[in-house]
Amino acid sequence: MINPRLTEFRAGATGDWVIRDIRPVLGPTLPPAHALTIKPGAEPGAEISATPAAWVLHGLPSNARYTEAEEKAALLAKQEGLGRPEATCAALLPIRKTAAWWDLPQDARRRVFEAQSHHTQIGLRYLPAIARRLYHCRDLSTAEPFDFLTWFEFRPEDEPAFDHLLAELRRSPEWTYVDREVDVRLVRI
Amino acid sequence: MINPRLTEFRAGATGDWVIRDIRPVLGPTLPPAHALTIKPGAEPGAEISATPAAWVLHGLPSNARYTEAEEKAALLAKQEGLGRPEATCAALLPIRKTAAWWDLPQDARRRVFEAQSHHTQIGLRYLPAIARRLYHCRDLSTAEPFDFLTWFEFRPEDEPAFDHLLAELRRSPEWTYVDREVDVRLVRI
Image (cartoon, rainbow over all chains, first blue to last red; front, side, top):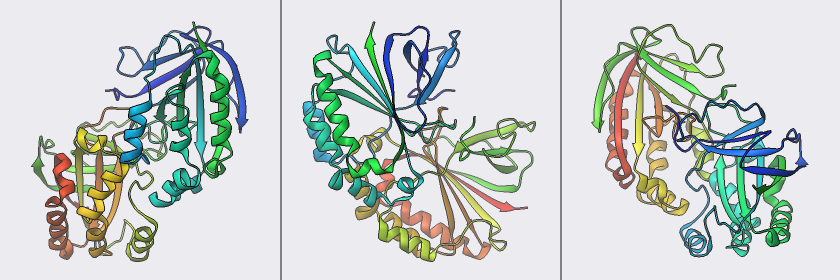
C-alpha cells in the first residue's frame, strides 16, 4: 500500500502546468519537457500512468525538521495556501545536499540553516506572495536523484520577488552544502 | 531503483534470528513467527523472496533528528557496532508515534526527547553493552504500520539491563506520544 503522502511530479507532453523553462543551477539538469502533472499518491492509479514521461520525481511532505515554535506561529500567521486562482506561476526547485550536510548533528544543521543562513527569516519576508510546499525525497523506498523538491506558487508580478528570494538563499552558507539544483518555471494552463 | 539504505525485516518459518517471544506492549501486536531475516535493500533480490512471510516491516537508517554535537561525540566514544560474536541476543522494537508528536515544532520535540525524557542520556548509560540501530519508516514510499524500528544486540547476561533501559524509556514523557509498540525478542542461530 502506497504512502498517502507520496507525491509524483511527472513531466511529459501533457500536464496541468506548462513548463516555461528548465534552468540548470548546479550539477546535471533535467531533460526538456512540455508540461508537468502533480499527482498525490493517495489518488487511485498514482503509480500507473499511460503518458510517457520525460522525467518523474517523487517526494512527500513530512514533519518540519528545523522550524521552532515561534517561527511556526509566524509562518502560519502570514502564509497563504497553494491553489490561489491568481497564483498562475509556479516553480519546482529540486535540490540535493552533500553527505557532509547529512552527517552533521542536529544542532550544527540548525545553526547553518537559521543562525547563519536565516532560511526561515528570509522566507517569511516573501509571505504571503510566495506560497510554498516542501517535499522530502531522501528517505523514500526508491533511490531518488534529489533530497528535496520545493514547489512555489505566485502571481506573475511577484516573479521578480521570487527571483530575489532564491538569490538570497543561494548565497547563504546553507547553499555550500547543496551539490545539485535545478530551477523549473511553470505556468498554470 | 531501490534506496540502498532500505532494509527489510521478514518474519517467517526460517531466518537468521530465531524469534523467542513477541510481546504486545501497546496497540495491535504482530502475528507469531519462528524466525526473522534482515535484508538490506542494497542486496540483489531484496524485494523478492520465495519464503512466505508472517509479517514484513521496512525501514531505513537516516540522519539523526535530535542528536547534538556533544551527544554524538559521547555516543561515538562509547558505543560498539552490531554483529559482535558474543551479542547473541537481539530485540526488535517497532513503535509508532501520534499525530500530535509529528505536529510539534522541532524545539518542542527536542525538549520532550531530551530535556524531559533524557532519551540520549539514558541510552548512553547502557553503552557499550547494548548496541543499537534506528530505522525510520514514516517517510517511505509505502504506508508502513510503524514510524520507527529499533534493532538492539546484546549478550544474554545483559538482557536484564536491556529490560531496565526499556522500562526507563517507557515511563518517560516521550512515551506518552507512542500509540503502538511491540517488543520482539530473538536469538542468533
